[in-house]
Length: 354
Length: 250
Image 1 (cartoon, rainbow over the protein chains, first blue to last red):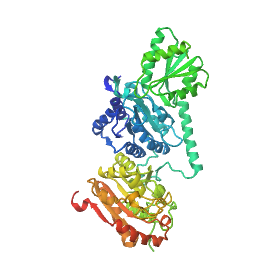
Image 2 (cartoon, rainbow over the protein chains, first blue to last red):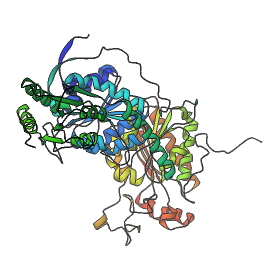
Image 3 (spheres, helix red, strand yellow):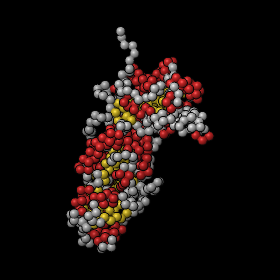
Image 4 (tube, rainbow over the protein chains, first blue to last red):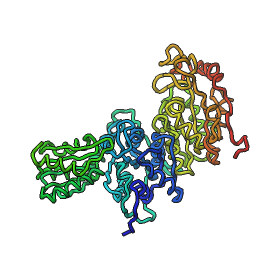
């Protein structure tokens, strides 16, 4: 077990990306992901990598597209308004079957919004911020350690399924410091990419990285093939942490920063002898429908807790399929719910107020 | 009898979709000849842009990437930074390079990104059916300037080579055309030089090729060449706007 060090979430994530074999980072300054890019600018030259500050988020994501097309591990990081700008490129990356890692350290929106933590980009991340039929793998860390652990998963899953992967963090996780065990340094064996546009050296036919299919039959088939992969992912890659859900009559569902608050509230009501649990989605796409459905067999109600006006709650409802009521509590715009507020909601539901 | 003329190795057998009289075919050939002569096909990666040349990924036999509209220089930057030994070129039209992709173009140029840019300027959006381009001439009639481009409302055309020549990161900015044999030979030399610059690590090289669009100009191919000579060439003078090899700067 490597020694633990105290690190900010943004910096820990950056170091973990380097350990995962990423040597190319393209970014554009935005709060609250600043430390991530700054860390990359310091570290990349020391490990023979590239840090490039692009002229825009649009350019940065397209640099990722190019580097990824060449067959190497590349990433970019941003925060909400910047991710909107990247959405065009993300659609092209998905449409070209390229892996890539995109970090969203969320802040409040819409528009310029604010710079405090929020979770109001859930729809953008999981329902497609860009145009067309496509998905991203979306991973949601809730601790600095998970910021580290999920980065290599994002690269590995992206390579395996040839699709972009997003780490959906927020300003709280990015800025907070926690003790963290970084992966052991060492050369990571990366997968072969025979499809890459890396120069054919006269040894094979030319590779073409492309998302244009003018024949509708061909385009439909291409998308259907991609969706077969998506179905495999929905079957095999759902991840969630189930906390005290075995006997739970009320199940909270919360991810990322808000799951930390929900957990505190669960601990509090458990002390009061109430049967309340928490499902913490780790993959937001694929959404952990199976864990929700399992809990729905015994639960009398669900409560989604988010730092938004209610986005993930839609997926909870789809999973619960109207079997029991699904409630929602959220704060937004950079406001963070307190455990006390969540506790109040729990008591309202258990007391039959709602 | 020996073979004295044939298709360049770096062009595939896929039939091109370009309209009769369009000069894209000539420009593709010049790019392919340069790649062949330098013996770099195996380590060359091309970036197709959005516009008439979008399907050039099928026509060049090197590895190819199709970029979002205007983003070819950013995609090329990623490709080049990933594998610096490779030779990376973009093939872009005027709408792609000088309108939607202006930021990517200017910044790739000012970074001195070590890539080769082939810029086809035909003063119109061809693929979408003949709208005003950033390089459409004052008074030019297009689908979206039906009374002629009025500079009071639609602004002035962009002279790309002149603009980019002011940037320190640019190694070569040259405007050529392909309206006759002598000009084609000059264009070939410029394109080859733009690739050589990259191999030598000199930075961003752009060759702007004045091109025709008989279909959307509504002219026969020979008339289109004459229109290019009498209208485009006076506004966009041929010539070398920057060449670091001539300044002793390298």
